[in-house]
Length: 242
Image 1 (tube, rainbow, N blue to C red):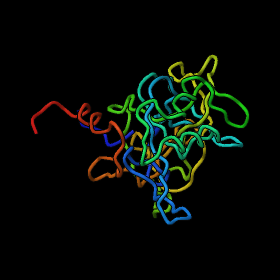
Image 2: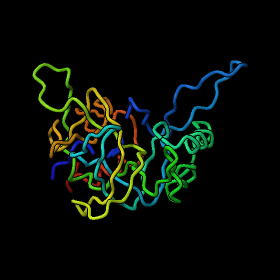
Image 3: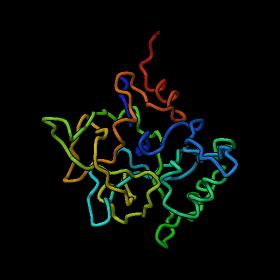
Image 4: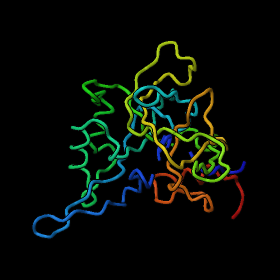
């Protein structure tokens, strides 16, 4: 088995343009009135439990407000990009509680509790399901491809969608029973990472993707550390001596 180069979901989930480095990485802190550097919000926090996983969706349907992505329902550790949190109160509490100087441990971030309790509010609506990044299906799902619409001779979509911390609802009688959640994802322009060795979505849709600069194609890794990736990469590698 040859190890594929990427998923996020997803990061789904994952990153540089959208603030997804490692738990140890920080945003540049701003100076207060005394000239001292303030603590910067922790960019990634780790949670456990149920969540929506959209990083493998390649048929997200564009609508008037964004894109509807059919996503998986999984129960496993997951990663939240704090800068993408859409619940204003939860975002404020999370960024205040989880900082570079005092990072949150697993499940300590307020956003973890909001997701777990179904109290993630977007535009006055509480959502029981939220899309975050995790590694389910990583080894078999992704065949990443560099997709840059500005390149000469480019063939593929000019738009893609990002589903990090997007609100989701359960779909009754879903077309794909394996993907019973519908997530309201945001549309992006510019270079991105295609999946299944393609830059074109399926069934008239667009790809749930990540910006192109978050992946090092030469070394087959994220350009910034992402929690858990080294373990996943090792698990996906063929069994042989180095």
